[in-house]
Image 1 (cartoon, rainbow, N blue to C red):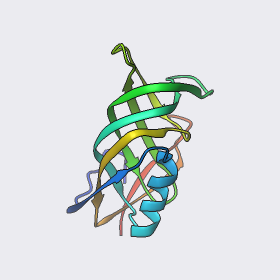
Image 2 (image 1 turned 90 degrees about the vertical axis):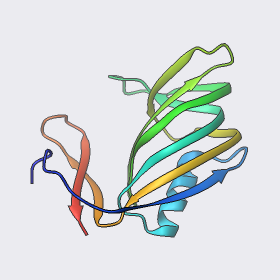
Image 3 (image 1 turned 30 degrees about the vertical axis):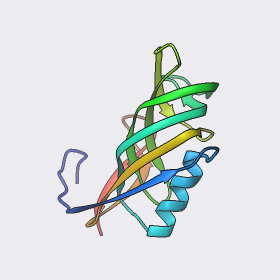
Length: 141
C-alpha cells in the first residue's frame, strides 16, 4: 500500500492524569505497554510543565527549558515501540514555542490526557526514502 491508502478502524479512548514531577515519555510508554496499544494517538491534552525538551524544525539538537509552561497542544501518533509527538507551550507571558517533543518533559501541576486507540490497526516505523526519517507504517492487525 502507498502512504495515501486509507485504513479504516473503529476506535476506543483512554483517559488518565499524570502527577507533578512525572516525565511524560516514560509514563506514556508504560501506559502503552500495560494496555498493549498498537495504534494510538493523542486525542486531547491539558496541563502544565516545569521541564520542556523540544527539537525545533530542521535541527538535530534538543532545546531544554525550565520554568512554568502551559501546554497549548500535544498531538501525534504513538505505538508500542515509538512515537511522533509535537508539543506547543506558552510561558508565563504567553509567548509560545513548539516543536518535536523529546524525552525530558516533566509535569508541573497536572497533565490530563486522552489517548485514542485504533483497534483494527497496528503502527510501526520504517525508513522513508523521501524524508530520510523513520516514518509511520500502518497495517491491519
